[in-house]
Amino acid sequence: MNKLVVGNWKMNGRLAANEALLAGLVPVAGLEVVLCPPFPYLAQLAQRAGGVGLGAQNLSAFDDGACTGEVSAGMLADLGCSHVIIGHSERRALFAESDADVAAKMARAVAAGLRPIVCIGESLVERDAGLVFEVVGRQLAALESLLPTLAADQFVLAYEPVWAIGSGRAASAEQVAEVHDFIRAWLLERKPAFVTVRILYGGSVKPENAAALFALDNVDGGLIGGAALDAAAFMAICRQAAG
Ligand code: PEP
Image 1 (tube, rainbow, N blue to C red):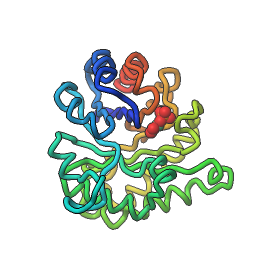
Image 2 (tube, helix red, strand yellow):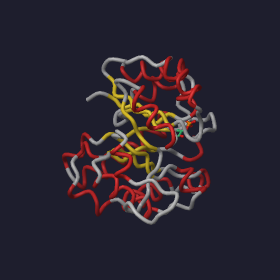
Image 3 (cartoon, protein in one colour):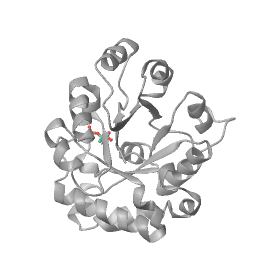
């Protein structure tokens, strides 16, 4: 199966700057790419980004209706989104999203035909306290009730250690391998078919470290933040993911 590279633009971009960035992106054979701009620019990318999947960075846990300021799963599907990031650590930390909120959003995404990219990962305090598997296991357990009806290609998991995001300090290959292996084993205990669920790594992926991370078993691609805003860096990461 081809690897998946997701570009999370976070709260960055303007119409002209987005055009310039998109102009620097070219299709890479043997790779699936999804770009996740802020909500206002989804329509721009839907028209402009040929050959690339479109994803949002969040969605509402509620259905359409009296919910001012929210964006529903149905709206994202209507705009052509195939994916949606859920439970990014910035949302968990800055907007107090709980494991239960993440599960509710995942359910909304799946019901609308979107593929959720569910982010999980420990903070530095949790890692230093030896709680990595406990935290990741708890975040996975929150999704468990949704899994029986899901096929492997209906959702994506992203291991993103909080301390590695935007810090310039990616997790080491050993750290990534042990958590990805843990996540895969957890999935396989639920369903043998989950052997093909994509597990992405995210956290300071750069052209310099991408090849080593993507070479690991159970690393099926990457969730790229800062480097996704630089066309040359993002293309270099994509080429390494394509092998
Ligand atoms: C992210 O935003 O999900 C992320 C991994 O960011 P960065 O690549 O900048 O660490």
